[in-house]
Image (cartoon, rainbow, N blue to C red):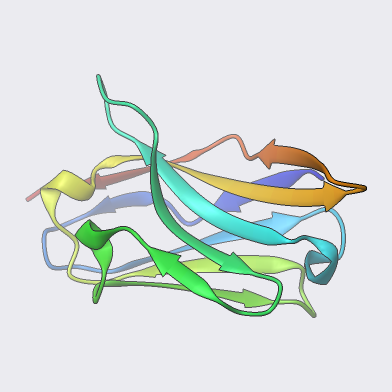
Length: 118
């Protein structure tokens, strides 16, 4: 599946952004979709995931501030980010996990830059 992210940008601390990830196929057929991020010099880390059934999981660092959701009619997953902090600055990647006949297929988007700075 191909994934295209959008919505990144520059925002001041305390501000909000909403990231979008459009999938090239029905998102309802994808087992899990999520957002990861990678800051300079750091490893890629989980931000949030959402299953086809709507179950969500968040990194402790974003709980209460970020919300992941999906619109299966638009094959799109969103990440609403509120109360942004400078440490949220990173490239954010959309991911999709499909499991077919017990084989897992992982797909990634190209990434979108989020910069939180005064």
